[in-house]
Length: 438
Image (cartoon, rainbow, N blue to C red; front, side):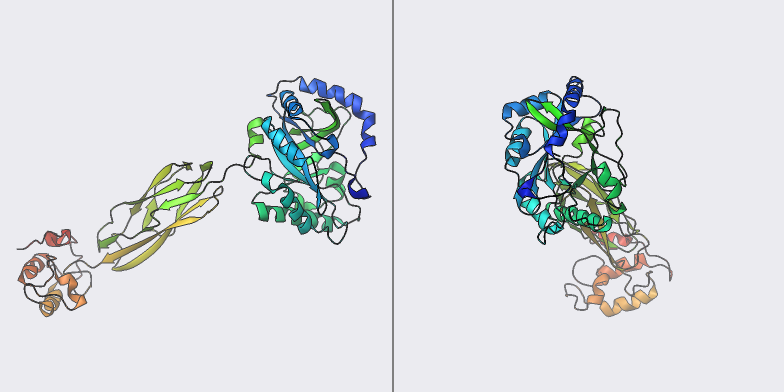
């Protein structure tokens, strides 16, 4: 990072003067690198702070045209310290087409106020408008240990800071440190974090070089020089991304999708022995980006078609199929869950409530229509145009005309079968509502 001397604080940060001895050599190297094609395999970038002073829009345009495509700008330091060039850097750099991100220089436990949470809140308060869609993920600059904290304490402080920033912004930060710090000051609890490593060899080759990374599993960004020069700015920290330009773009916070379901509930009703007709619902992304989601169901009698995702404003129609012929009479509830890693309101679910009614004429609900149902039918007879008072007699109204009379009895006779013989759910066309009669 750029030199840090806030508030006269003493500690383990480096001096601007320490850079000068190597500046001429590294500036020459930079000129060679900037002559390389802008679409080199590994994109190049820089990081800036108030130490560079005000960088004009013209200078930002030169930075971008020189082949530097990304930049991290200091937003804050310690507890309550702000960088007076941060906003102009973010605005002018973005306007020039540079991918911009914010970083915070940490002073862990410098005083009672320098807790991880306090410093994280200071950072979010200063940089919150530039943490999110269109910006690189934020960074914790971790290179000061003036309080001689142990590995465990220092590492926990870093994790707490990053967790707090993620909690407040929804974006997981990265961590910046030098190779000495990575090897001797931090422990494995940080190994899986996204790393921006600082290591300045005498003859760096950002396209092929591999910096030592201590306890970390891999590196994403490498600060390979602290003495670059471009657009009349010197010294500058120079960086490289460990991937292609397309992969760098994945470190830019993408628009978040939002799931909308319509309808949110399905309530099919069938007669025992039938298969319910297919249902459907739509999944729409009313947010940004592309909605990438998966569907799961929690019932064996339910299935859905596979889908691949919806872009903003588009709707996927999901077909719901039922395998219900073996379900007994009753009510069944299941859920179709829609989960997306990139949606602000994931997961969502559609509730399915399936009602299985008895076959008309199966008055004792034993799964068959036989002589025992005839006896019950006689009890249910109301006569023509007489309302059915007993709810248990509703299935005796086979012609669905609101009463139980001899018309219904004629249909029942056609539907009679042997005991324990599964009835025909379409017997007499009664369930089709045709009012069939003998």
